[in-house]
Length: 129
Image 1 (tube, rainbow, N blue to C red):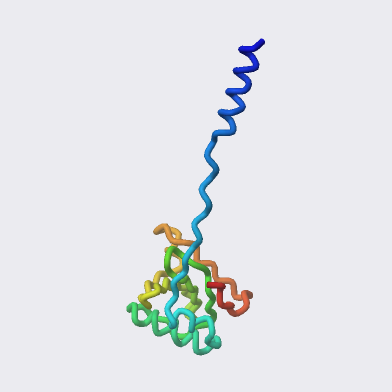
Image 2 (spheres, one colour; image 1 turned 30 degrees about the vertical axis):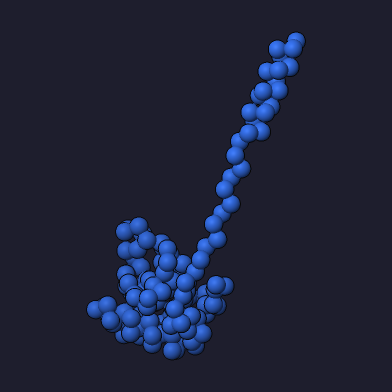
């Protein structure tokens, strides 16, 4: 009987000896003044800035019909742009103001987040940072 009680006590202590899960590390967001400014611009001026970034990448967009903040991807802000030629673009903007431009239809194919542009989505609000 004593052996059974000792074995039960050892098993109980072994179960309690599991290490507690490590606390989640807080995510640090670094944004440049220019990145923050995109959230503050009205739709027309934001469209102008995003269209210029598309042109600077060597691509074209005759007119921006819609734009929205999609979310964070790694250390970049991801914006989506719908152009009047029915092409959707994903713009990845880094804290150093570098911009990578991809066609939305290609983002998932190369392992990037889906570029979901919904015309019913209201203008973006600045995320908490």
